[in-house]
Length: 112
Image 1: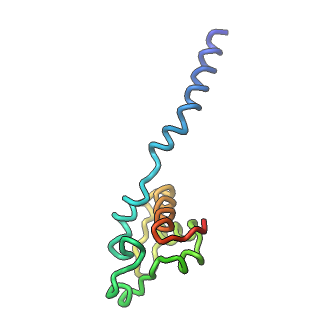
Image 2 (image 1 turned 90 degrees about the vertical axis):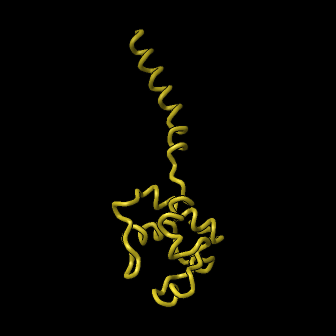
Image 3 (image 1 turned 180 degrees about the horizontal axis):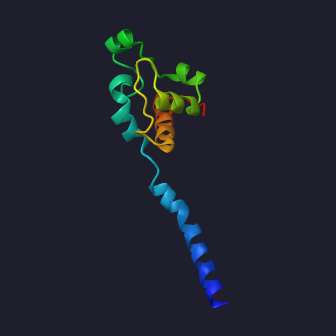
């Protein structure tokens, strides 16, 4: 009986601690965006004019974000495009989701 009480206590304790661990480990969308996206897409989703023209880099603004979901942005980041290197194997799905969420916050779109 004592063993089952100890096991139950451990399970409850672990379950109670899980949300805090997950919150601490959440990826930093801004830091990931700055490291992986900012050079081409600018700090607010607006690429440098020369790059936008030469590579057809889209402006990530409210109009663009109204057309795409966070999931579709994450797929594009993961798989890349003609002019964008894929992040597959370099970023976790959680990282990509954090970047998409941050991008939407910075550009002012709200579609998830």
